[in-house]
Image (cartoon, rainbow, N blue to C red; front, side, top):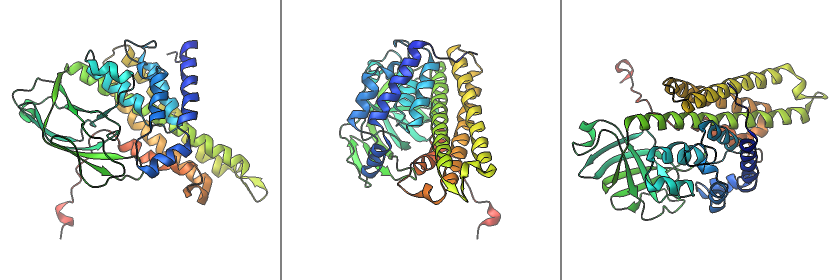
Length: 362
């Protein structure tokens, strides 16, 4: 496998890094956290106008999915909101020839429902149920709802595989922890998370939906792309966390020596760096299989997402331990990576339903 970027691809990655350094600094991320907003207009414009949202799609200048994965790795280094993952990697690809797909590459935002974290039913073209962990709702014009391929849950009028689009008529005011109606039959509630990245719980009560038939194969490929992009973002964030810790270890002195000269500090960061590099290789392998249309892509994408989440968690923990007590303060960036690491592990896939064994019940 040769994952070296071509000149035009390298220029695209460098351009994204330059744009993100301008519109996604850690100071701006802190401001988004304080206001409990997903991002601002400048961030959307920088990502859309640079043509980055077209990467990895058939109509873009860089149609190879591997390019999109490497761009999302760059975004992870800045802890940038994963627009590339959800809009280009997943939603636009899933919608195919639907007009909304083209608008997404131009910067329109949808709020995607996380696969596996919904409890929905469909009857007469109307949705009922609940979804958790919905991102970008304060910026979205529509909700994108992937529905399970089981007719007994969706109703006899549903095609075997379908995506529902639900219009967002009113933006969610932020911060707004109380339930807010954002459309006819759609109520959203802001959920405060450890990372302070806003997510919403959305309740549907007979919400009217536009149904977009999607082949089962395309839906499966979209999930492969989504998992791989989530993994790529995590590897970028993990790499940056280690770089911050390494730089601090070279300048911070104890007992007359930089703390980076002590093996206990070195070993911790090296172990984390090895895990991040292993995750990166899995991401590249998954991207290569996806571009090649290989059936093994699904398994490797799941493995990449799982390992990258663990690697990011280990890297952020190692960085925090290197900074010591300073790492927990808001003046240092290490805590930003640490708080997002666990969320990166849990932001996708179904949550297990934990049950207390009968022997432990009173």
